[in-house]
Length: 111
Image (tube, rainbow, N blue to C red; front, side):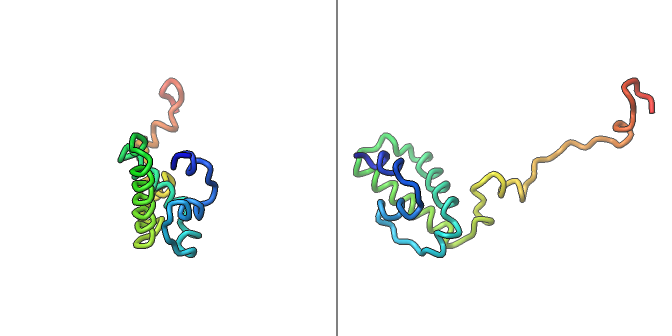
């Protein structure tokens, strides 16, 4: 079974750490589990790991999980902002400004 097949069968963040033999602090994982796994996925996509042989793929997965985990040991989900909602909280999408006068005008430009 390939590392990808094994990873696809996992459901808890702890299982990822155990499979890849990466030590972790339960307190960090309890707060940041989804953020860590999403960041790991971002790192994996950048490296195009899917084409790697089995040993290299497992090593890269381990390396990227360690890297993602360390991001959240050093920082916080709010500072790292891996999810769209957190990104938008700091940089909300800009809305175009509309003059108030145009809002009160009727279809024919009358008030």
